[in-house]
Amino acid sequence: MMSLDTVLTAARDIYIRAMVASMAAHQPCHVEPALRRADGALAVEGMLKTPYRVDLIGKATGARLMVDAPERAPDAPNEFRVDGMEVHIHPFSWDAVRVVAQPVREQDLLFLSRWFSKWFDPEDTNRADEHGLYRVVHYISDPELTGGTSTFVVDFGSAGIDAFKDFLETLARIGVVTITIG
Picture 1 (cartoon, helix red, strand yellow):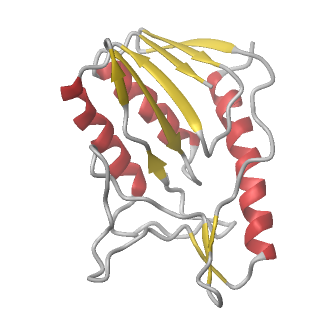
Picture 2: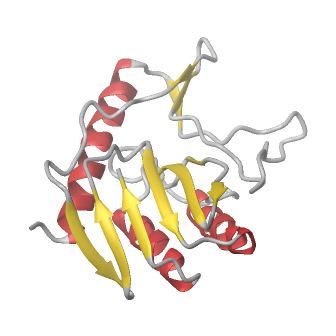
């Protein structure tokens, strides 16, 4: 079995390679811009009232470009424990992580929103890394709550594996016992 860091790094690396190739193919472009309202404030939506980042926007055309990871990682399911929480990881794409967590109560969703805001960089203070990326998450869908189980999708964008591990620790802190990724 691979370590958690190895699994996360493999998934992230696939996406980062795709982003870098897309950036090169679509120059000039804005990289990981947050969508904003006319007054400059972040455009937020959904029950979590979270903003959204696009992968790229062509400077000449204004066209939004979304980059999809061409493959999923890891090759086989892996199981881990994070702060007492069972973590089942099936092959997944870094930019479209499907999460099934249980138990989750509606009042716990505030913690997901706070986690997202921390890694979204709402003030755009992060500096570009060696690839020209800002190490930010892009999106979290509205969680669907059914009988104590929450299902949602996270686009981890160019965020590092530390953001993913913080995500898992956040879920463990709110009392999630089991999480399935994939």
